[in-house]
Image (cartoon, rainbow, N blue to C red; front, top):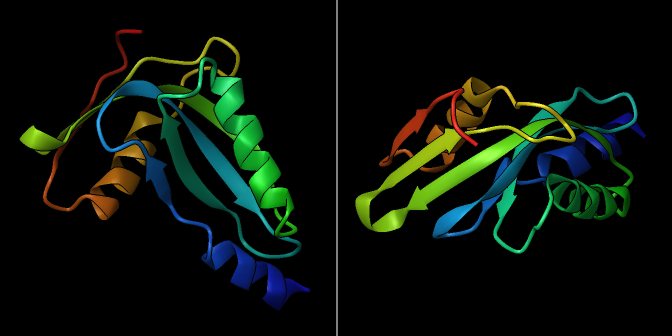
Length: 122
């Protein structure tokens, strides 16, 4: 079960965000049975609330036998034409995500981008 959980975990993308615009995001810790946890970033413009992002993510992960918890949220301003992403803000329901962790995840996914973050702003 641990090997299967680890394999399922390895297939979960670290980052899934919209290609353009300003939208909410959540930082989610994903766990498999007995496998180490990993943190993932999910951000989409369709979500009216941070909880919408988290619930959709939790449902998708549950299908693969994985559980998760929300570590917090914020906003992303993704400007692909400038190759920039700015991470800021917080979630009323989940609190502020650790934007430094989010920024590291985004830098791995978008190595040629300038990625910045700030605790102020909503």
